[in-house]
Amino acid sequence: MDGRARRCRGALLAATALAATVLVTGCGAGDSGARDTAGSAAEAPQANGGGADRDSAAGAPEAAGAGAPDLRVDQRAIIYTGTMRVQVDDVDAAAREVSAAVTRAGGFIGGDQRRSAEADAVAELQLRVPAAKFAGVVEEVAKLGKQESREISTQDVTEETVDLDARITSQRARVESARRLLARATSITDLVSLENELGRREADLASLEAKKRRLADLTALSTITVSLAGPTAKTAEEKSEMGFLVGLKGGWKAFVASLTVLLTVLGALLPWLVALGVPLAVLLVVLRRRRKSPALVAPVSAPPPVPAARSAP
Image (cartoon, rainbow, N blue to C red; front, side, top):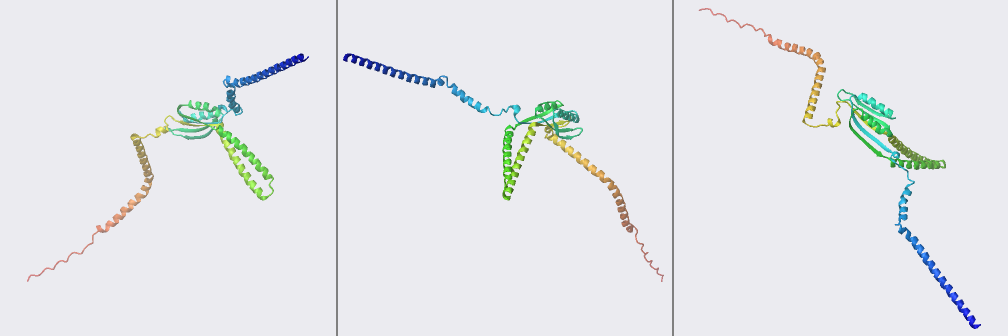
């Protein structure tokens, strides 16, 4: 019994030791697997070159800008301004054609200045046309004659327009706040103070709205300044020429103009000279004759006495 009990006890101890060994081995394997899994998971982005992180970082600005307004060229606030000079055969006829072209485009004539002369006829027209028809009107005007110059400029006022919208919204909120405070005023002092503050805020709001309307007008209607010149009209460069011949020509023109003025004045004074000069000349002649007449008549003197003849002794 004692030997059998000792063998059972030894077998139990051996089984217990084997179970403990298996348990310890399994835990170590689990820890190693966990570490390996964690290491694999940590190394996976690096194995991919950090592509996921970089893609996320690269996509962050796009995601942040996804909510920003899409301000393409056709959605931006742009002011178009043009200046051109065209030489035509008939200035008045060309001006009528320009006016018709502007009317067809949905615009109007903002200004019209003309100088009619046989040798130097010029018409300056200020056209206001929709921004979408700006290029078409410019090309149509250029075909009326010989285009001598053209200058087109643009100004992007999108940021200014957005800023004005934000300031107008904020100022309207301030005006409404002042009105609510004014409605709850209980004393004369508070009433006067709030009325003054409300007036200042409303004036600021009106100024901002006026700027907004001005920008809206400039962006909606573009401005084109057109100069229509006759066949012999000179350009600004030709008028500003310098040199001996130019100076001689200018001096001769000044001399002729001065002589013309002098002859004009003399012709205007001639009737007065005749009307007043002839009687004055006659009067002077009469006076001179009167002064000379006493000197011509000499006084009659008595003859000298004749001596008496002596008698002979």
